[in-house]
Image 1 (cartoon, rainbow, N blue to C red):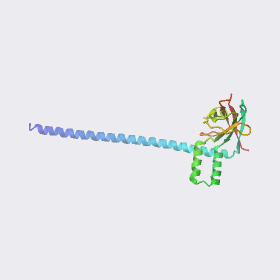
Image 2: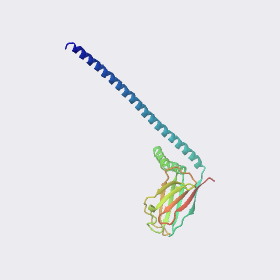
Image 3: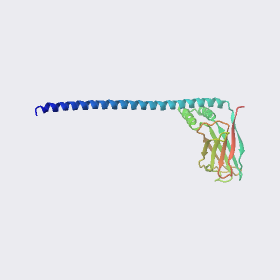
Image 4: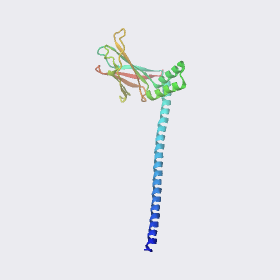
Length: 221
């Protein structure tokens, strides 16, 4: 029995060091795997940041390019190509580019003495939500219901008839008739994606037989 005690002790010692060694190996392996995971995560974050930076740089460059081109444009002409009123009335549109809108903001800010923060907030909002400019729709109809903008949609297509933008208008109660007895309404819609003239604007009136089609063209002279 006395001879068994040293043997048992030796087995315990060997087992202890074996477990300790395995634990150290496990910890080392866990540490290596954790470092690899952290590195991979950091690489992923860096790639995302690089992608975002490239998109921002491209957007800024594109905005500068558009601004230079738009600064040479005096106005945008609008020609009605097709569309008829069954019961009388009027359907008209106007277009302003982002450059024109920002120029108006600058003038208004100067006249009304806006703070720097107020002007910057307005400009940033327009750069986000009016990238393609602004469409103004003016309508006149014979009845109150027919002049409600909930029956109208605005669709923009390029000259190859590829759709670029579409908006179903929200409900808006018309104004009381003028001297011509027509109920009238106005809708101003910001275009939240980059669009360059010339292009077509379709105004869909659900109460008419066919949409109204307009062509918007830049005028430089």
